[in-house]
Length: 277
Image (cartoon, rainbow, N blue to C red; front, side, top):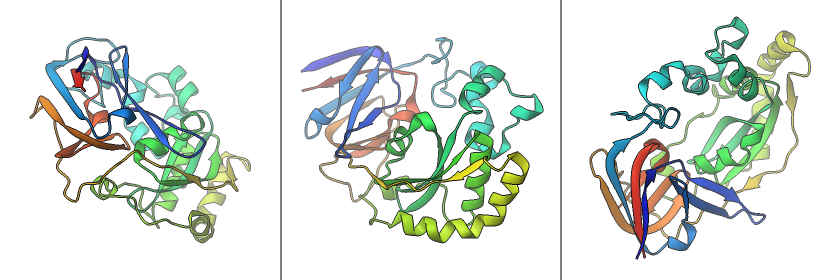
């Protein structure tokens, strides 16, 4: 039996190899657990009833924005609502909580993409987060369709497309199996003309080169899952401090056990330990 000592939980680290296969690491404190070799084996995670803010390391009774204490959540730009709704970015109004953070994270190239998670969806990501964003969402296919200059512009394009397709993933459906393959290039050809006026408005406001239409290849992603569940039960460390069972696979930010699933990103900064054979 291998024991990983108590440490702060961070979101799963997923990487894609040249064959599209996803490899996962589970960060606990300074340690990294390779999860793929544990599929089919017993894994136990123990929550030690302590949460420490991932920014200031102070104890907090509740984790906000996936790992922060309340004061940090209130003051940090990365916890602002515009991160969830980039079309509300207020950097140009001079009201960004941390202008330097905004410059390095929001005033940089972003991509608008189509993905197949629980079905067809639209999303956005920084250029540095490809393919991490798709891995985190459990996408089996992804296709960048636009490159834009800032996060605000990506949000404007996304909201235009969201009038025709979903911008969210049904996580329960995603965890029951892989969605049927979609011809993402064909979908892009159908969708882009429907938002042509909105694209023109964005270019008129921000410049002709603000939105660049792309011609990329579809990216396939293969998640390490030996068996999917037919009924999804969700674990919660706040209600069940010890979670154990046979690990059936990993998809998105979820560990899939034979008895249920847990969204590891949701419990960022929780102090946990692990045991596995």
